Length: 318
Image 1: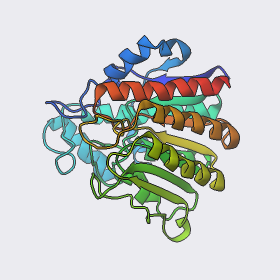
Image 2: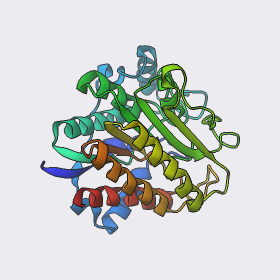
Image 3: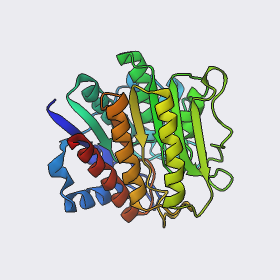
């Protein structure tokens, strides 16, 4: 194996961000990159540039009509891609396709054995549905990865772990009845926060019943509550033994995020990443992909994502 951890950054990924003071602005990658440089992280990983996913690749998860609508709005450069949260801007299709393409490039390199783990700070767009955008998410890169694992690589038993403050509804509902999709999500209680889903009784349906774990936390919950919830995540993964782990580590769960009310520190993200690296080594031949997800306080996202990347590197060294 040539490289243990690969980091996806670049101008094309940085263009995924909405203008005019939108919380998900185009400066988020830069905030992470400055902190990563200060910590010396780029010297410990291989840097990879994104590529643009093809329409056929994006349509492994998304309906053709949604992809075509994004393409048209990208040319027009105005309007809303969903119901108002996710505005169109010139080039939004290309930026979104690069988020998906980076994820697929990373997946190919993990599956070929060229690398063990990847991290993509601009990624983890977990609200996008098969048929549409939602919650700042145009294309669901994690969903494309899951469907590509099944259709391209024959890996059926996939774990998706999400610690973003918002419920990962764009991953939960498409696979709600899937017995091989192992889902674990710690988030702020949906009674207080978008998208209003992810209740503890949502544990999958039909053949997928019991394969899903939703852990809503009350506003104000911090690291102690997270650590207690995390033990349930570990038990869930050990019970169902995935072959691959997708990790969405949104930083909007840290104290001081302008859009939410949890009170984690970056230590929570480090703890989750360290634990998942151990579980990946135990059950998945080390295979794990990390995605940055949300986070609207720039200092928070820089701290949390650097903590995750640091643990990915340390995990490859242990």
